[in-house]
Length: 506
Image (cartoon, rainbow, N blue to C red):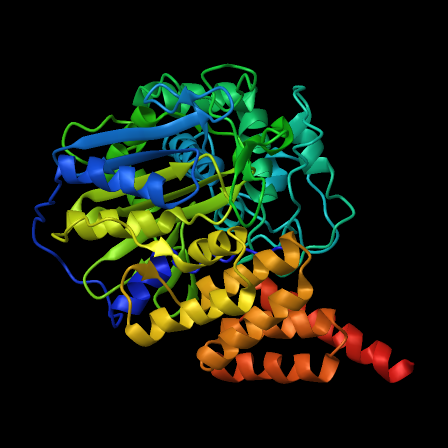
């Protein structure tokens, strides 16, 4: 099971830096933006990470600046430019939420209405009739998660209705509004609902109500995926040398247009961000009251953490931060807004392998608040991987890593999750279980207080049939961080239970 290891998401970045406290009123904030430094920094990112191309948007009270670098297609050497149309993945939710709010402010929808009011064919097993549009927007509906089938794309008019009808035999996972569990189907069903309510195609609704008023003239939810203006998705071909290739599957199907349909450009995204931040002269896509609702903390998921309409929201010491971060289908993106300071950044790349755009967003947000933009550090697992491709043995590479730790080197981005990523690649992507286990053992010895190190080792030991040893390290991870409840933790817990049951019955 290959799992997301994007440990430096912006939310965690801020929680680690600050002791959280309730949001306080702030005075007018003057953002700092050094454009030459930003250009130099962006170039350093593409030289450090194995990226085909990257797009960056920076919005302040006075400026909407965007730049692109690298290739939209590495095979054909097409440059990634400000006119390149790219798959915007999870940002789709922000546009769909905005459109739903627009329909509400013009009294054509109420977000508190049940879904069955507009979609009588929406049926599930259990308490589905109480699911409202608000529940869909906040992922608190209880609709189960299903991955998009991009290898079998649908383009017909009834695609979204087919998605809504497809879950008729599925159980509602929990009472609507009682829990928060992400499912792209929430926004796909909402897209179907908006289309039926307006008696138009979903794509026409969102164009008329949001894209056109904002002047997002290069954006669409129904793309021509063969166009040469489109950025192509890329994947890692070799997980030691990190050579890239264009993905054979393009991440679009109309059945999931609401959750993953947006295709846009840097200039168009800057316009939406200006609207959300209410910068002077911003395009008027939503009323101020609707923007307030877009920025409301609608569901508390943890201490100082909330779910909004398309957002993960975190309260830090001096600001409330809005984040939408995702990776899907050979693309990855991160958008972070701080409305109280009228600043926001978006980072996107046409790869999703071993790249966390939230790290770059964190650097840019820090710069806008007065920090310098120095070159990004080289992730240690990339450096170690490339040493292995040069013919160095694993023991030698691990010894080199340890020498950097002892010396307190600041030349590399280091830590238990990044060292563990080397093991993840060796185990899941290269089928080198013995080497992966050695890396995980080394990581636990070096970082005994890191829960992720113990979880990685537990998975490797379990795969090797060492059930009791795996259980020991799983329990150690949970003792170190009792509140952990990620999909990865759930997967390991379930696999351990099955293994123990099979062992007891044999």
